[in-house]
Length: 132
Image (cartoon, rainbow, N blue to C red):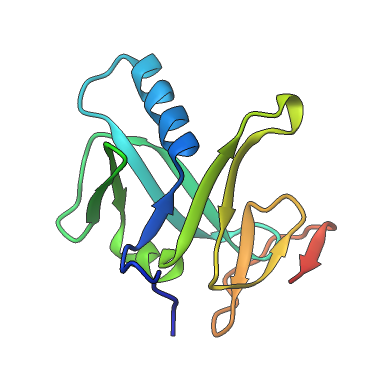
């Protein structure tokens, strides 16, 4: 079973992450873009996160708005992302987006790939795997 946040939202995006994403969207200069989040097989631990801009939605996408930001998640990825919290820290070379996923039972050292309890995914060879 996958976690759902206490406030029943699928994903939480901090204000600092929302502000940074809005800034990046504005810099793109293309109207109608939104944030698309997803998961695909691969990465050191079996699954890896995808985060980017898109302007097309599929019929089975999950769409919501948070902090004035439109967020879209494909139906296949949704089960891995329930309860996820996304934050952004501006700390020079060590800053960037972070993803806290309560569904992950293991993740790699860089934090961009993860493993869930009942599914292995298709891990790639990696030496920096860290068990949670």
